Image (tube, rainbow, N blue to C red; front, side, top):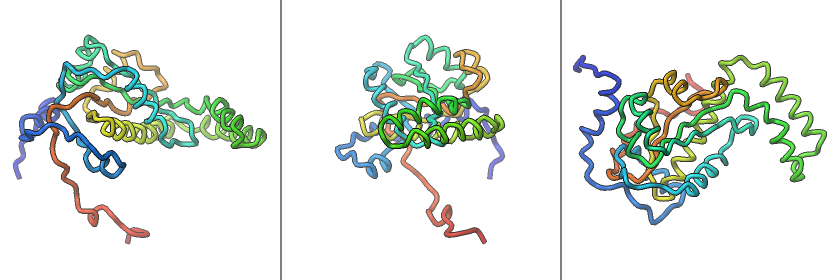
Length: 236
């Protein structure tokens, strides 16, 4: 095996050079869940002239926000970067990945470590719908403040990343069902991103996600056999 390596920017952009796919992303006639999940690909080449209407972006994010979360605290936050000048500013922070500027928007998936402070607002809505007695609601809220309020920063960050990852996956599947393409990205300078886009101190950066109309389908999926990643009951 060769010992050659690449810089981070080369690593993130080389994939386009070796992608010999010629077909456009598949447009689905059948959008049942299993079909969408199987057909979604990470697409890195987009039509730079295609723009997604804000109403559709909001609809996709509303769908993403239906994902489950720790104690239903919904710690995900979304920064939608649609302005071309802002995308150009993000480009070098994200190692010059071309999809940053060519996709319709870049969505920064973030996580709020202080999401537990919304507990009363969230659980009051549950109680108002008749799904929880008021006294039980109060106990839930008090317990959330006691527990989450005492968690160390690292644990709150982990929760935010798990919640954000779940919402991001739901967003990508919803986008595919609507005929759009996405690619999740972790290859960016988090510190520079936080400073450049004034990300609040209590927010975690989970990932960047390009959303738009793909022009090349991207690699076919190659996955390890299920028996290589599956264990029943316990590890020996």
